[in-house]
Image (cartoon, rainbow, N blue to C red; front, side):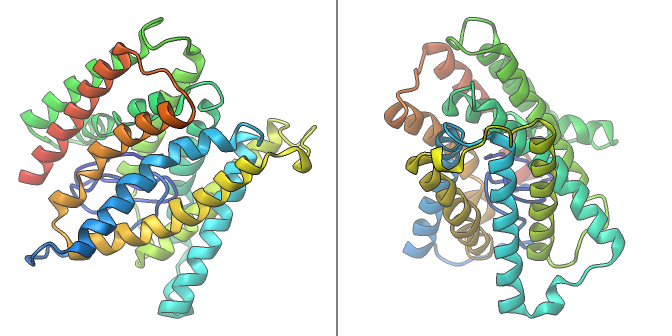
Length: 334
């Protein structure tokens, strides 16, 4: 799930947790370290890493659509998150030592709550929705997350500013165009509402991640969040009965490939590139992936899955992305 989440309440990626102020949240990455704005010249390595983030996180929606063709949504998401979380924990222990994973009960509880909101409620519901909603439309619906975050900040007593509120209005207007019955094609309203519910829970997880005691090491926090969210998805999948009639041998090769792609490229490689960018590139440049990811998702969905791109989707998506641009640019100046 590629989700921009600006502001002090900024939140996590599709596989993890909260981000630094004014930084949008990625789709299948994890909670990166708070960056120090660099003043150096932008080189080829920065642009290469940025392209990875643009393309890989924009393609995760396509990957999810292919996975759920022959895999149950919550069980597949749960296994994916647990694997990614364990791999990340192993990397942290290898690079920084086992002490980097040490947390107290309050920190572990907080990371678990955030992981459940982001990965079970946010990403898990997106995986469920993509059984009926095209990947491109899903990405555009999710792009409205910054609007919910701004509203949550307002409820908490903050005043994000006129520009942010204008972006909220634009985002909600685009959301209305995308969700009006009949405008976005033959899409079940239940699936669209599931995506919207996912964005609300994702926003709540993003908002709360900076207001509760989290593990000091952001990489360790992301690992705990992914494991907790993955276990939550597995339990919900079992409760839904997704294990009944499940034939692992009937899972298609392309679903397995997409599954592996989401774990390795979406959660680990793209995250590493993103975390590196936060330390080496201007935050305003890194934040541009929030505008690009939905466009990449729509283009890939149309080219590879033959998803329809109707004028309401183009119009609504453009309005949503414009709202995101306005919110993020406002936060960046504040």
